[in-house]
Image (tube, rainbow, N blue to C red; front, top):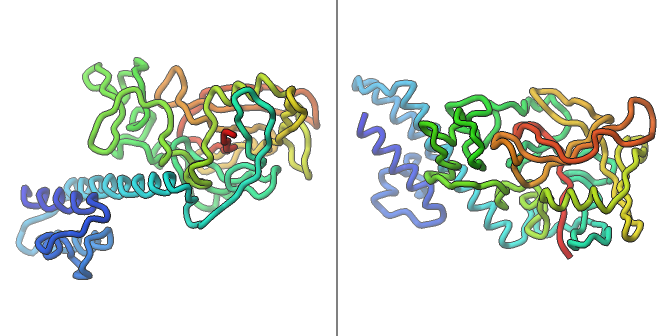
Length: 329
């Protein structure tokens, strides 16, 4: 069993080495499929090799295989984060050479420019993609894709814990001692790779859905930017091409943006579409590490009218909300 974990550890270290050329010794040991490269493609072959040892009565039990999966998952996530960071630093949106997105200058004191559409949308009234907070991949509103948006499927989790207590990245000293960011009642911080980092409350570029999808010039709005929008714009419920949403008109220059009431995804369902809009900020709640701040609004039960439930709210990080990207002039 010790030999199994030594093999596992060295294999994970080789994966995490990224673009470095493996040595001849490493290639001969870990290049299981013999393609002269050590990549995730070697994982199935490695598992088969380990399982074959059962013939020698060296049984690889379920716990060992789960540890293999967890270690490889962390290694792969580290590589994905490195690629995302590289894309961000180069200003490249994933899968594209150059993507330009329109924005509106609302004359705000901070110089923040607001995108005219949600991330993943082509028109202002389109819902676009739904993102769990801190996940850089979004999904459309068609729930037949099987994406649940529950704690078990949330990516920034301790894989051994399937509820809010398992949030392993982005935490602060919030007194929630049942959370995995506390050990024996003491705050230990966020799990980032193999390290523990304390008071990580704002999304890094690799976990920011706007930066990841649109490139380094864009990001998810901070709490301050959303509060500024709330302060310097008037809000009215309107319909745009048959879609209910909120029209925010600048008190500074009269320019406006439209946010559709796209609802949210939760537990395999799409809820409140056409009634409520939820838009993520890039920061945690000021109260709990398992929640993040969002901008939320609700239209009256019938037709146009005064906006209700308008402003900043806490919500579970696992939920699928919209993102309206910003940049600074």
